[in-house]
Length: 297
Length: 297
Image (tube, each protein chain N blue to C red):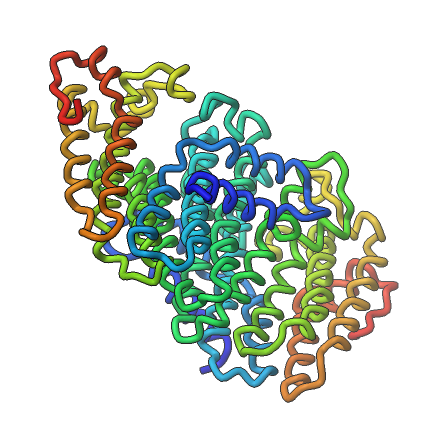
């Protein structure tokens, strides 16, 4: 089974496990809407790839950990789109959960997704309970306070925000969790893998800032210009568009260099390079910032 | 250490573990506001009492599981009070989290509390990882879809609701989790303890319905008449006030009778009786329904 199929199967298993008979139908629909069809599933791909690089004996557990991280990512998107935050009517090119099912079901679907994430990884760890303790520590730290995505979002409610701390919590934390959980699901140490998650997470956030300025809503599948509209910190605003693109390329180079030497390091470097091209395509930067020389070009 | 102190210590440990340095201060304040000072902490008390009845070798794990259930209860209250649900400005006699910190921080504090619940029980199970898998299964089923509190709340978004299913999910599920988790934290089987949680959960919901009609906002610490205002199903509306009080007494009798015979059964029966008197005091029913003869009177 290839990794994409593994990931979708793990996500489906997690969602089906909490559907069951006799539950409220609209909540179940709203939860499915939040998870399928998905985006690039970069976090679970990263988790699985690290587990494979660590010679994992149990790819099901790694897929389940990656799926849990994806479910938490989906939960954060559902809550981010609420009227009190971004008030976003579209997401991934179709109505956001809030737009399709209303505010109440969007709050509840996000809550249910957080619960399902922990539920599904615990179910998959039944025969390897000793790995569940570090996995839950890694995953919960990436989502909760003081440095996870919830904390990242909460920085928007503070009068002063440090850009690095904000972005690290809002985006970087789940990438670090993806690499660390991949190692832990394989029974390996998480520490050598955190740097990869950190660099990639920062690169991803910078790419998001770039596309928020440089892309159009149709290509992006969600409204653009949101950082300026909501007065949010943005590396594109701070460094200029050309500066942000160069910074992005630098971060990708650091990410690639941070990969510990191991059996799967070449495969991981390929994944990082492919992801960089997907996030900030050379063709896009040629149009919007023709004077910038790309490292990857 | 008595059980109340154990519970407050476990809650404090869970909250402090996710405060740390460098996080967004208002989120930390909103989370504390949601948890301290608490209500009767009936769910963790029940969890600990069942663990003790099962001759638990590790009361810290039981206290942590009970605290996790209480944190999830607090999370549900924070989200229930949001403008899109009850729009409640007060809770436990003071401003709700939403009223004190705004809608965005109320959404985020609820999210963070869900995460912290799983995080803290996993941390406490470090040396007993094999108990963590059933504990997370029990706790997550009580909170998520299709039969947990999130599902219960989601029934309010459906055109038709079965009263029993709604109340079982919205209130009963966490009581069942409290008794089941108490047994599991002690390394015992959860099954013999589920009936106690089911009867108590239903009794608690009926008591809530009664007090929503019969109490005043000052005594209750939150607005009354909410079921009628929001058109929610209510046993007081369905059975009449006298009928609801008699039903409550019957449920308490069933709860008491369901306690398996064990070392701590007498202590548990005392807890159930005390809780019944706290929930629907005889003095209150003498004023509002003088013709009803109380079993406990």
